[in-house]
Length: 244
Ligand code: ADP
Image 1 (cartoon, helix red, strand yellow):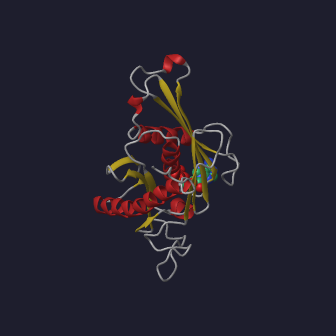
Image 2: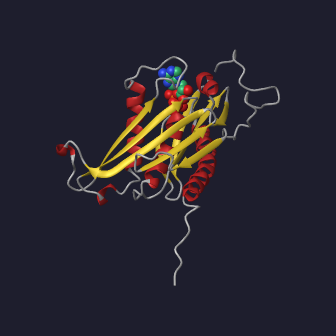
Image 3: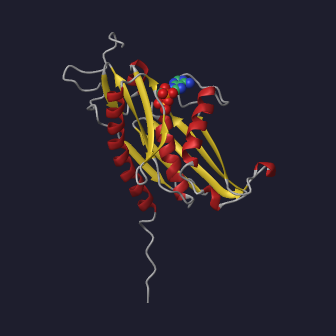
């Protein structure tokens, strides 16, 4: 435990004024890009992410095509200017790992078998990173997939829970993440009650793990509501055809 850095104020609040179970401000929008089939934008505090989807389309190169299902190509990528030390332009080990866990999570939700020999491409572009990028990234990706009309069992939303100086906190800030003892990013598809992504960096007791899970679930329920609103907003201006 890092005792030298103070991460709580004297009255027990977090340094940015949040309570332990409070997320940063979230903003979501769907259909924000013109050139792809589906897109979404998410802001979680200062973290800013675009997600874009192409497909289903013919799989290339052809030898990668699967006769009974679509393949999902996924890329989590941080823009060079997304962090304060200029990030190398290519894919780092961390980006390769996050690409893998996000892809495997999304694969459990998409009805890939409906599109044999096809490919679906998902791009997650981190414009500004300030903690929580993998969970906000998968949240935006599921919205962009829905925007592209790709059939899925459910949307998924993600948030991290951190352990900071012995206390569990929802949606750790970059500082809390850096000096905390544990970080557990989690994404859930709430309607089907399925865990889509779960990682744990650091150590939690079994009781802390259970508490972290229920803290995350509450955050994810409110993210899910915002996702549904963002999708409905896109179509708010379109009037239903009159039935004669
Ligand atoms: P997540 O973004 O999902 O929380 P990490 O826990 O690996 O993933 O990273 C936490 C935060 O650390 C990131 O959101 C970002 O703000 C910062 N970070 C990650 N990689 C770098 C990097 N190469 N340079 C500077 N900051 C970074």
